[in-house]
Length: 278
Image (cartoon, rainbow, N blue to C red; front, side, top):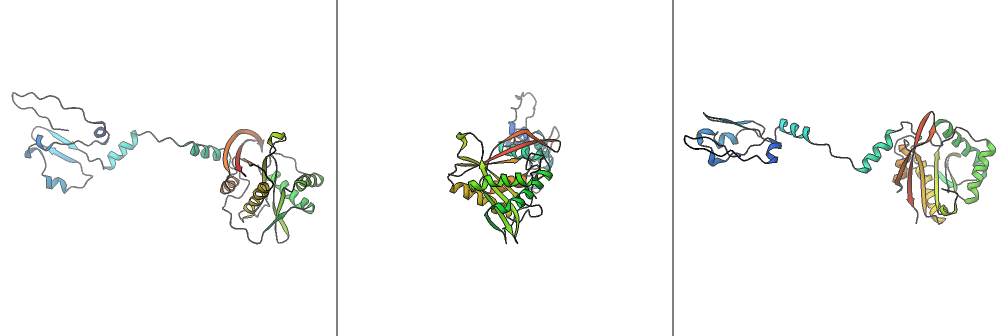
């Protein structure tokens, strides 16, 4: 901006409006040709001042104030008038997904590589151990949306259906079954016959040891070898540990269905994840 002044017998047009950038920063440009030496500080003196210093242009007729745009006050003023940048759709989805529930079905610590653990196809003799793990999840978590535990006969029948398809696996450590995983039809109608859904459960006290990761890798490989096209994971949206586990194996978020389940007196959201197998 040029410093305008009035002289005797001379009318001077009003100064042009400052550019928007100058209005935002509070910086005023001074034309050297329009200000005499008596109106300004010396160049050397001005250069010797810190960049955050307010520099006054003093004269007998006027005072002009230049505020360097780097000053904290100017930066704070600029921040106050700026609109917050909108979040991406992915970020909004992540925030929404984790805000609805605080109960986790798995210990939310990063898994280590499984040591001393063997994953093998399940056998009829594993039915009771598998039922025990399932019933604990039913009673204490939102991993299974039911309140009714399985009897011994029901547990054996449930596992037998998976054994017939070859779609059940157990993790064993020290002679104990410490987890299991299955895959089965996602929907009953024949149009869904190439899509399967997985389930992975780890015995209480054994989370974070790489067992879930080893089981998930096994069912993915088995479903792919069986010629299936897509694997689906339906996960309670607050179960961030299970969601992270599936993300590490390439599952993508297909969407979240709000308040489609209820357990422990609260509505539950279902996060759907998808992995192409072929």
